[in-house]
Image (cartoon, rainbow, N blue to C red):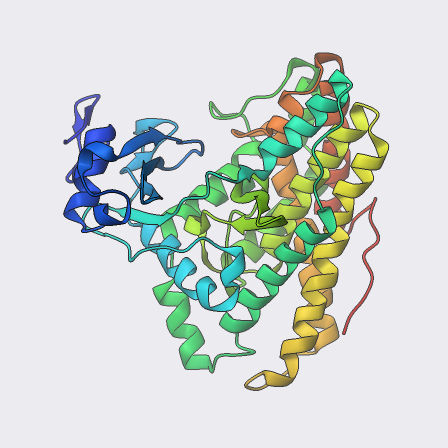
Length: 411
């Protein structure tokens, strides 16, 4: 069907209900993977993020996830239009990642750019990492034993993911012409503009998108006149806009990771690379570090100090694995660009990561999208959690270094 909202009509058919999804899969020749007839297929909507609509279609023979990009931000509607071709960026990133880190990403079908649909592996047997982190804290509060996560393994998967993608798509592996071509083909201007607005602009000025808890009012308004911080954020904005180093995920937070058990071992899948573009290598690590820091603070606030330390350890593990991957791949490089010093390059990536950890944390405090890790805490613990995060975040942005975790090591 064609969906009409607020007198806005799309130029392509949107998937709205079960029948739409089944008809789409049948027309795409994918229905036989699920069932012998349309009537055997069940469909449930699992839309959770801000950008797209997602369904799970299940039949006796199998299941798939069906993701469609509407021509607007899904969480807002037609009042916030955005080009649905963003789903092509996601498909392009998946294609490359499936060759580099196949165990860490879902399998996907070729993207349908007539309907802006991506059909992929059903990950519904796994849980969104952020949801698991929230449940762990809820269990602690309720006096129950929280579900176990191997945070060292989690960090290593993310570090390997970032390193493999970065090395394969940077000038370390590509000749200048091929890298320049990738910069153009992987361009993602609308979602880059959205990141710049939501992460690097709006949290530092009054606007209708921002919100925060009343107890943080004075601290948030102080951001708007903090000249040292604002100057540092301007630097981060320049890094984001100009440092076209390698293809990155672009939105690698705890809501972009699925985790659970498959065949008796912990399974981790990184998904939703729709914000991917050729940008600063340290950004993906920084977003992950910010969200694991948020998770660690949440655990601290309910007295789960061992859990907090385990969560924070994923940060160290991701950097250690990033370095290990660089060490393994460095001898295979096509060549070292003039003036590139490995130790200095790694130091810059680490510093950039903390810069992006800082701006990600500030937007989770004073911007449009907050983290459920904090919003689901016992009410009396929420203000202290935000205050702690904002204090750390300011230091990360101003110094480009961590104040709570020392990360050592270079190849």
